[in-house]
Length: 151
Image (cartoon, rainbow, N blue to C red; front, side, top):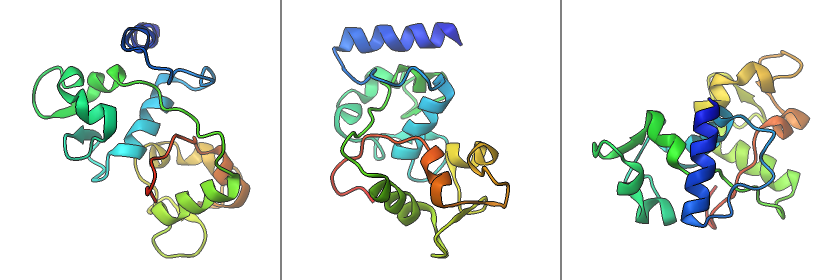
C-alpha cells in the first residue's frame, strides 16, 4: 500500500501535475474510487479509451501498461489524484450526486442506486444506518474536480 502511494507521488512529480493537493487524509483506495466514479461510466471497474477525457485520454497508453485497451487494477494507481473543486458549494455537490445516482428521484441514494466506490463503502456513508445516503450524509462522499457539463 505504501509502495502505491510513493509510486503515485513520483508519477505526479514527474508529470508535473499539481493534483496531489490537500488529499492526504484519503487512502489510495478512496482516491481510486473517486477516479472510477468520475470516469467509469459503465461501472465495470476499469476505464476504456472512450471513457477517458482530457489529459487521461491524451496519455492513455502511458497508463494502460498491459496494452489491453483499459486502465484497470494496478494501472489505476498510475493516475493522478483527483483535485477538490474548491468553489463547488455543498448544495451544488449534493445536486450533482443526486442527479447522477438517485434513479427514483426520492432525494436519497439507496444501496441499489449506488455504484462503484459509493456502493463498496455504502455503510461508511450511511451514518444513521437507515439504508439511504441523504442530507448531510452526502457530505461524507468524496468531492472531486468536475469538468464543465458533467452532471
